[in-house]
Image (cartoon, rainbow, N blue to C red; front, top):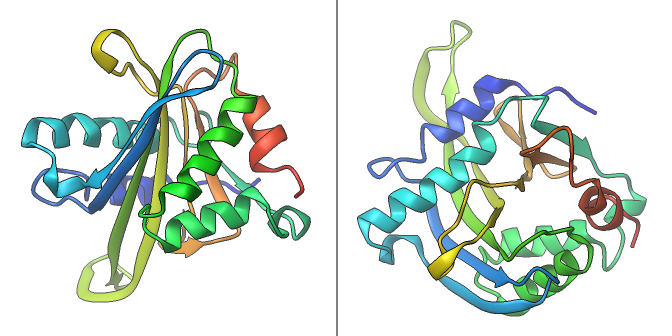
Length: 211
């Protein structure tokens, strides 16, 4: 397990504001407590009202702003876990299509619903983002030029209440991992809101299981 540099996470969250928004699309599903889909959504992030954008930005930021290496931990995929029909391949495909393929999203919702232990209905939120990573000098001063475009997805799982209003995220991830200010497609940063009762079932039986 690699250590996450908190500065990397803070660098990303600074691009998650109304003025500096890095997200292009939001998608997700409303799930019942048994893990079956009640409804889905998929739209361009800019099409949301400012109030809705702000609410959803807070959900995404909660995953990365959590306590680094305690609530948010980085895991690596083995070659076996990156095989055909693996969840890693599914995540790579979701990243490549920028969440515009509903069929791929449905596969994720179904797999997730089969393993996630929920006490009440919940929602799965997906955010697609692009971040032009600026070059930095040895003294950490930004040079202004883009070194690479980090394309990523954030997933956040929240309990839902009346009128599908979400609570605080309970589980989620950032993929690919953002390590040393660069994309690491062989890593994933997993968020667990309750470290005393972590959702290990998702990690062991879905994310890091062999295909």
